[in-house]
Image 1 (cartoon, helix red, strand yellow):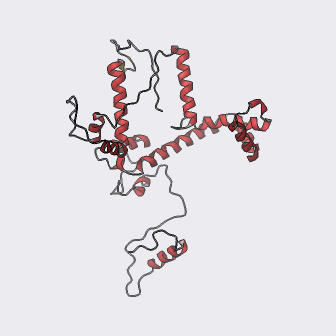
Image 2 (cartoon, rainbow, N blue to C red; image 1 turned 30 degrees about the vertical axis):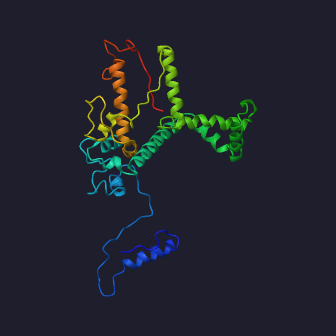
Amino acid sequence: MGVSDPECDKVSGRSFTASALRNLLPAASSETVPDLIIHHSGNAVPEYKNPSYFPGMYPTLFPYGIGGFEIKSRPTALAFHRQAQYCLSISDRSFRYHNSFLFVVLNILQRRQAHLQTHFSVSKSNFDSVARSLTSVSASTLQRLASQLERECKLSNLTSEEKTALALLQQVNTLSARIPGSQASKIFVRNEIRNYFGYFGLPHIFFTFNPCAAHSPIFQVIYGDKSVDLSSRFPTMPTGPERAARLARDPVAAADFFEFSFKCLFRDLFGWDFDHERSSESGGILGRIRAFYGTTE
């Protein structure tokens, strides 16, 4: 085995393919086949209901080639996102320390949410009219509309075609309303908060909760540092660069620290009962809370 042209800028792809085909031919003095033959197909690998999808992508995380997602032979069905949470929560932290596993799982979850919302939108009764309007909009109309919106021009100055294209943006928001991190999901959250105003009245307190994991001894313990003594008033902490490196290396521990801090705040200071989803009988430092709405930035 050797390496030829690691930058892949001197040898063409056809030359690599031809060399691979020659390696499949038996040697002149021996009829044995090569030690390693990797077959490929012209079809894309399906990501839905494919238990070998993740073991094929990450052989170091699934060394035996088993334990993939959405296995039909399981006695109890296991959802994709729940198995992903399990992989990130086991004591072996290879999954959470991997360079790309987190991002690939998040990307698949976002695309599945988009596919699900697309199905709901296509099933709407106004799909035919929206489809006709969408196909009738030209690229030049969209370009003019983008320029108008960028200059913050009045909507009354738009032409009928540009108004039609602007109305289609509402349908686009509907498609992505449930995708985490999308602009439409933020609009959905704002609408829910306004509904809270109508039912519970205006909120008495608005605050931003932002615990710093890098300076917290609790995060160091969640990360796995057993040398930090939480019973001490001033625990001995690692150096600043080391704490920052730990935070960057294990974002799952950072998320666990944020959820732990958030629940401690509302349970111990505000008296909120998460099990029954209501204020406790004794309440907290602000009395008994009727309702609250929290969302991550």
